[in-house]
Structure formats: C-alpha cells, structure tokens
Image 1 (cartoon, rainbow, N blue to C red):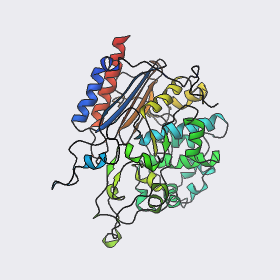
Image 2: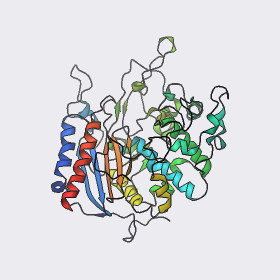
Image 3: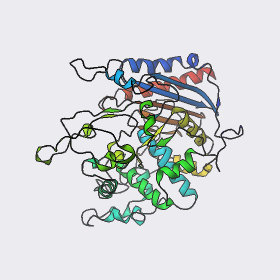
Image 4: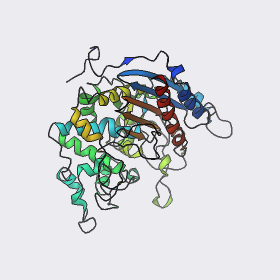
Length: 433
C-alpha cells in the first residue's frame, strides 16, 4: 500500500499541534541549548509525537561552532568558509546523517517486510544466503555455519563490534569480502555484542532475498509509503552544503590514495593526493578522506561501500523520523502488520541479559533513554549523535538528531545530555496530563 500524504485519513499523516512547544518543553529545550553552549554538539533537531500528533518540531544551533578555525595561526574561520557554501542555520527541514539509525529505519524495517512476505526466515543460517560467509577454513571458525539472521539482528552472532575494513579495501566488493571473512570473537548465540559488521552482512543478505538494492527497496517500500520525502541514501551533491558536517578529515600530511568507491561516482570530491606513508602503513582512520565530511556518510566503511549499507548511510530529518515512529506506534500501518512489529520490537530471551530485539534496543539501567520510558519501549542510537526512542505504552516517540562528531568523534558529552533530555520531555508530558 502506497501512502497518499494528502489523505487526512492516512495513519501515517501526523497532525501538528506544537504551537505551545516552547513553553511546554522549555526545560528540555534549555538542556539542548546548554549542551550546544558547552560544545556537546553544534546542531540539533527534535521531533516529538504523542498520541498520534506531532507535538514538537524544533531546531537548535548552527552547522559548526561559531569559533571553529582552520588552524591556530588565525586562518579564516571554518564557520565562515562553510557558510559560503549555503545556508548555515539549522531548521526543522535540515538533513542529518543519522548513522546507525539506518539499522532500524532501513535495514530492520526491510527485514520485517521480507519476513511478513515469507521471504526471510529469522532462524535460517546466513550462509544459506551468503555462501561467502563460510569461505574461511572450517578449523579457523568451526561454529561459523550456525550463525543465523536472528543472531545478526540481535547482535549475538559472535562477530566483533567494529573493524576498520576501509583500510584494506579499495572497492565495495573488496570491503564486502573482508566483512564476510571477519573472524568470530565468541560462540554464536553466547553473548550480545553490538556489531556493525553484522549489519553490513545483513544488508547484503536482504538485497539478495529481495533481488533489489537496499536503497531502492527502502525508497519504494518504506520511505515513499510513509511520506518520508526527505529521507535518502547519498543526498544529491547540490544538497551537500545544506547538511551539517560530521567530521574534519583535512590532515593532508597523513594519507594515501582514496578508495575508488569513494573517489569515483556520486561521492567524488576534488581533493589533494599525498604519497603512501613509509613502510606501507595506513593513514589514521580519522583522516583517510582528507576533507570536511559534509553531505556524505561519516562512517568510513559505509563510504567505501558507496554510501549505501545495512549499518549506516541514511540521511533524514527529525520530522521524517517522526513519521516513521508514528507508523511503528500505529502497528506498522500502512506498511507492516501489528504482529510483525510486535515480534521485531520484543526483547529476546537469549543470550542472557540481552537488551536487544531483532534489530532494536530496549531500555536498560542506565539507559540513554533516561529513566521514564516504559519497559516495552524500543529505540536506537546513531554514532553521529542521533537517537530515536518509541514508547507504545505512552504512545510517545522522541527523535533527536545532532552532529556530535563534528569536528571529530572524541567528544562523548552527548551521553550525559540524552538521558536528561528524555527525562525532561516525559516529565513535561506528565505535568500536561
């Protein structure tokens, strides 16, 4: 079913009711303003839905901090140079790199659609879909054949959290081959460890099951039907200057030639080339592109994959994510069945003490969702400083998008901001009821 966004009866059409948002959520909004002043992140966009209505839509800050400079010797202001490329202020229509929210908005939702169409078996071994997953010698990884789609979705496959695959891959195919051969670090199903590698592999599996690329499927079956008109992989180059930057990788003294998947095609950017480092050593992970990362995916592995991957790559607005959350609160209507949503948002019983569902996370103490979200809530975080939490009991969703990785990823202050912000939102709602 394709959504007609002009149809007032459509369950995915949110009716705005946020004329009093500044007063109602003053404490929560002040937390974000203070966070920007304390340099937790330069830009933020918020959307709240409650009982079927969009009750808040607000943007804060600028693309970069006001006093960012190119170098300590007083070079021209970086904020001024970015301003020359386009609009600099954040507004509710600003696109953000949503990082690992891609895992739930795109990859998990595609899994749900294929599941309810009978094309995806959660307990099927991944090797049945991706035989290359077994290309390692059996004696090296004897349990590899038992890894299932469910294990990958629940981060219990035994794969490690992260590998710098982009340092040893020049093309999409090379990076995928490296991902398929990442050794397990635990027995499948024995423990939960959040894994980007697992979701890279899921993305490929879904494309093979659907016989369609991840970006094409999601556009036609998820974003289009839900009216998410500003959600996309690989935003057009002309939109780049309208997107907050996520990293400053301009260290020209450290680097090698850019991977071809990044240097060619839609992601091409004019950039200086520097010789390979002595001894064949690789550049630092934070500088392999040698430019400001703006309008292209921040995640390096996703970059080599061409900007479309199961773990990262999606760009969206807070309002579009709110539309998605509203559908999830409405039993998945118009794209999913309630029983499918229930299955994929219910916490798994194994491994012991896991907080994961097939694709989503759930609140655990302490939680980035704060202390007020109901036990049956589900959500996810994104590396660039994004988050989405959905509470079916309260009929509430909270979307927070930021670019906390600007100018580099060492800033972790958002971990203190998110719980306070979420608590303030729910406390304000409780006072209103």
